[in-house]
Length: 344
Image (tube, rainbow, N blue to C red; front, side, top):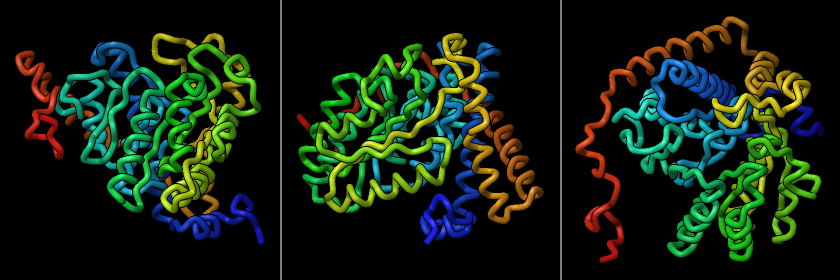
């Protein structure tokens, strides 16, 4: 029998429990994700985005695929390279644009960094800058599922390859491993921790190999192949919710832009960019769909529809007002009455 990687697109989707429309939805979300960040660059150059600006170009396939393999009741803790997670979960692009520009329509209503996005109605926990500080948060969420006897819930936490050298990564992974908690750790290995290459950051073949020291499985997957990422994440989630404990999934990509707009990535060899440009996750997904029966005309319609949609969404975001300075402290802290379990 052919392996999943060798199967035809239709057979591969069938093996993964997906259909043609699921694959098109993933492709569309990848296009939306890149389109949002490309327009973000323009907004930054126009002076409409305060501070710096971060993107995840080259990581769209992994972000969308991971989110597509989760369930609505799962908590997700994505980072700045994972905009596709928000798009896939249903965060409207106009709200992302509004967040970029510090408008009241953004998830934080103009009160946080332009990529510090979260929406608890979608079970997305907003990130902080100290990477990978969200791992202990996700582990705490997974522990709460266990304490409350909530079945079929899994927490997802993201980190980069460089961030995996920090203590909170190891503390989070260790506790999750000891308790066999329903959590999946996603490591976006884009090969650079700001300007530090991987060979100066870890002394293992793969940074996720560290998981073996905690007695749990690590899976290394091509982060530019959305179907491969989906397959790995789905299996890890199933294992986690069935009591098999956590998994560290390493999605290998290359950060196709600098750490942020203020970084021109001069330290990355030019040939690396050229090599990985040929592995573009969106083009790889497009080829998968075309091989599976989607026509060139359908593809053009999808791409054109995304462009028109994003124009409308950006117009809506720019119509959103800036926050009133007098409301700066509103909504920053929860009152006891707003909490499910008040701590008086």
